Length: 486
Image (tube, rainbow, N blue to C red; front, side, top):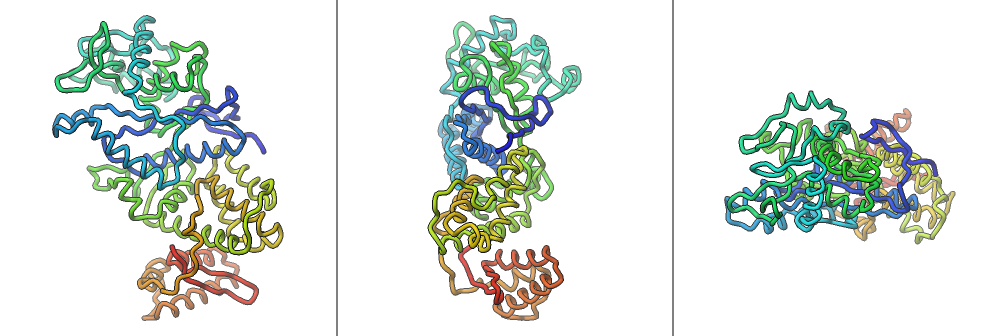
């Protein structure tokens, strides 16, 4: 196994990953459940789920912390407007989020800290920052003094003068500098509050919560932890502010050795927004599409790149998922898995090389799909049980868990809309053909493509059938098809 290379936002470089201690300690900024989660949230958390699985595969003990920001302006505003308790609002949205994560195959977190459970730790950090001159009390709260931290802007690679030019002070804020940010907000009428002597009752600011929770759970010694992650939209100001709060209190900075950030998710080429009318809650998307297909769709794009989520992309991912299921079902019917050293086929080593390359899940998935396409021949060479074991292991490494549904036998009924779906997908006119005749025509097109060595077209015809639940089986004496659950 080679070296794991990761892109570090802090240094803007690809670096060999070396943990600071015996355990790999990871902190990922989690949900603020004052509204419904969307697929943009899912994409980030799915990547860190695969990273965590891969680090475990490499033999590391991983401690994964993902927080819950359970107090914020939006939940408070809704509580004041409706009379509903803010805790009830947060609990409802967060329960929905956790159910969606389970459907997507995300492993439970080792620690799931709620900000309001760490008020003492938050207040301790604020007191320390005040004592060192990094913070100051004002009429409406306690603020962090950005000018006291020379490295401010280093994570985002932005100049302080540039940041100040775009900053502004809100009407209800009284602070020394536009870049200063709230550590503690003094209580307003009707808002939840906690006592903080001698300064005044109130609630924590957003940024200090993550600093305090990560310090309490991962860095009590003040020497930093291994990985801090989140979406690219958190680099500034949230993660920049976390560093500014945390590092002046540390024995040995930096706060985190490696900073990892996931790319933006677009919907049909646009950033998701209620004002654009393209906002769809994650729970609703999971009702429309197979959760494992959504996971595959995300894996097909590098974690740090912009991902465009479209109907076409999810259909392609669903076709890929059906190919994986078909291969798994075929191997399972041939033999029970046998424990091996994961070297029988060589595909584990290939996937390792891909994931070592800054977690290139797109290449890893391509290798797994190649494995599926060649599963019959590989099993004849490596052995049925060994091949099934290695194939199932790689599926689980990427968070794709085979289930009993994968093993269901063929169904007799053809989908009623099969001809229409094939026509739309392939842009072919089947001239009033019935379902079986349409399938045979696609098989003829595929045979012609294979004869002229047009493998891309061959795959396109196979995937179009598979997306309609028609599974192909190539053999020496020809190609057969069957209808499968999908």
